[in-house]
Image 1: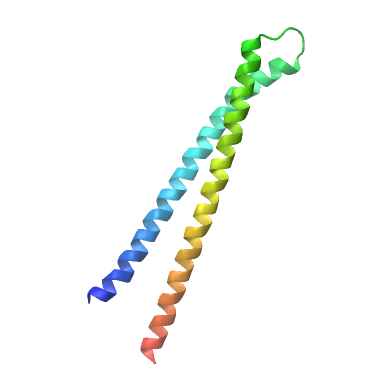
Image 2: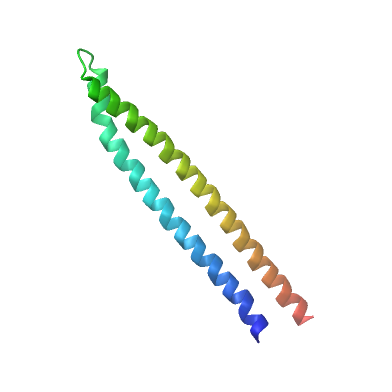
Length: 104
């Protein structure tokens, strides 16, 4: 009986990890959107030409760097989700195979 609970428990843990990974991805996407919203008006200011405050230039550089870092985090999280989903599919397939073997 314990042996049957263990795979179920493992599957539940995997599902929990996948849910948390999706939540983290959502949070990262929101943060990226906030960065974009802060960056857009400053970039427009730079594109208008004329004299631009050096602090604005520095802020734009900082936000661009943070945006790049945020995009990298999002990509890493997407890869993590792909790995978890592949593990989940593998586990489910193994479970179906095990049930078929037991029925024979």
